[in-house]
Length: 167
Image (cartoon, rainbow, N blue to C red; front, side, top):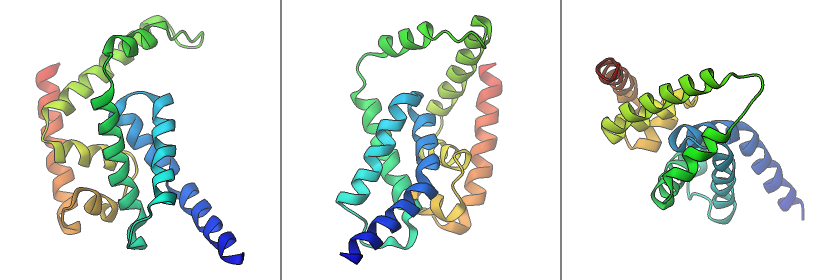
């Protein structure tokens, strides 16, 4: 019986430590904050149902699962118009319609630039800006930890170059 409590405490610690990072990573990939919450929960359900064999770097494992789940969502999302309609119907009294439009344009530019990048570089930037450390990025992307800094720097340069061309 005590083992169950130990497992629950361990899961709670892992959940509290990584949930926001996983949620943010997914939200940045799919650009749907409500659905990102659902997908993040699915990632943690996978952790419970089928934990990794080696729990040494659980953050990297969670990140990898999150990437796969987010990409699966994008693949299964068939109706782009319905997502755009949800955004256009969003009406917040604190934010003007002009600000919403400008933010949507910027998000679209960033997404467009990211889509033009090499998949590894794009994921590297998403992970880095989601708060993952180099070791977690290394495991998620299958690259050497010593190469992560260089990969991030090159990805930033490439992003900036492509973004300037977009503007």
